Length: 258
Image (cartoon, rainbow, N blue to C red; front, top):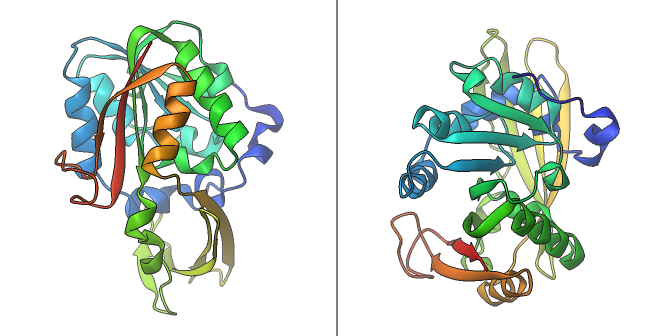
């Protein structure tokens, strides 16, 4: 199905890696199927033929796998360029694609909502996060589940994000080559700002993309979920369901709508 038009919503998600058609194919190269996808796909199998929403679905890597597994899937993302690429992939017609934010989701429509690839960390303020959780609860049936990942601030993952000037070279699907590198800019009060750079070797153009992520603690996640009428069922520290602090530096939440 065709994605709904975004209008001016594109400006509300400034991340160029999701919105710039030149960078979206690069995102796919840099973010291949991994242990996180295995985890969320296995979780989806616990109830066959579920009604699911993949919030922040991006270019549809996991979304399409969910549909291929027999689920009834809606892929939601505010980035038009990412959705355009997702819709060009095999079996894309099995998914309902929506261009928008969580307010777009219908009420009491889903058994399971996934929010993967650390999308939760893009909601920076407590008010924005609370509003997001409220809409996710509204979109779930009572007893439905929400699952998402957020990096554990105790693991200090950002310390490895500055490339120190070293660059990686990528060959894009159109044959063009690009080199990428990143800088860590600021770390303050649970907020981490970093900048990614992409230099296209053919044109000589360099794109700069600065992002800020919120690192919430386990206690902050639990409290916010409780206030939004969720009950935390599981909270893991890694993709093999390890305890917090003993896994991959993750906080992986599975919560049920009360």
